[in-house]
Amino acid sequence: MISRSFGIISICLLAGLASAQVQTGKASFYADKFEGSPTASGEKYRHSKLTAAHKTLPFGTRVRVTNTGNNKSVEVVINDRGPYVDGRVIDLSRSAAIQLDFINAGLADVTVEVLDAGDGKGGGPPVQIDRVVVDEKEFYDFEVKRLNPKGFGVQIGTYQELVNLMRLADNLKVSY
Image (cartoon, rainbow, N blue to C red; front, side, top):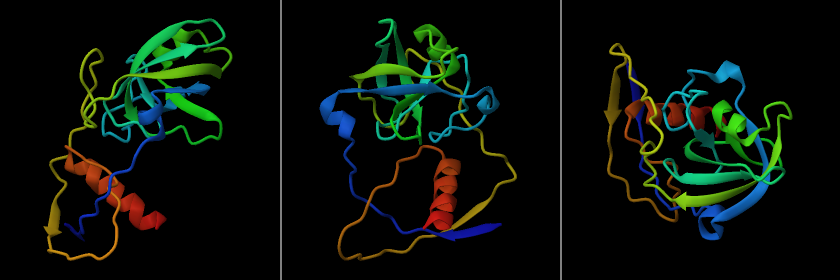
């Protein structure tokens, strides 16, 4: 059994793109090795779905990505975080990259336009996304304490699935 104590941290992070609604830069796409791996939203990556990773947009945000080199566009749903390479603004699923016709090049200059800001929970039309299932053998024990913090906090995320909260907590403990 894993025992964890969590304090609740909250502040709203404002995404730079949310106010601008349009962003330009380089797009890349997921390597085949990520097929079936969980994304930051907890959904499994599927190369056949029209999904993408963005550094700040809320999960469930629907965006139009246009390849400025050939003017081809595709609508995708944000369900992951990244890309973590300087100069790249979005990481697309393989099927989205195919529609934008840059599979052979590996990268493309794109414009990202927010169509629907979503609810931060991910999923929804027009893309069907698989959900992560928590293994029945996973048990969690929480000790909840009322805190009276002074100063400011940061909201790191909102989650529907406990496994996603646990994954983030583990990553934060190791990183910070």
